Length: 70
Image 1 (spheres, rainbow, N blue to C red):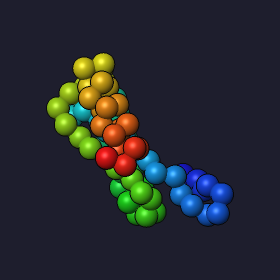
Image 2: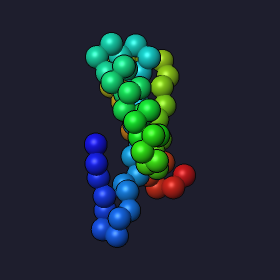
Image 3: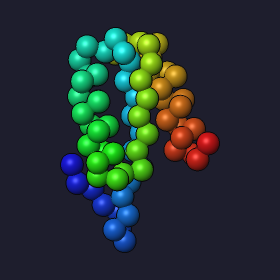
């Protein structure tokens, strides 16, 4: 994956995945490893939960706080 903002800057990226998310957990782990290798400003978390709104709500709240610098 390649991305650049004007001036050669890279975007800040954050993602999270539930430990019970059978669809995307392995892919998210591979993506996180690649972002680390490429040196992106990248945040990744895993915690209990699946691919549902019970997980998405807290994940979105954390992502918005992270994006706002907090």
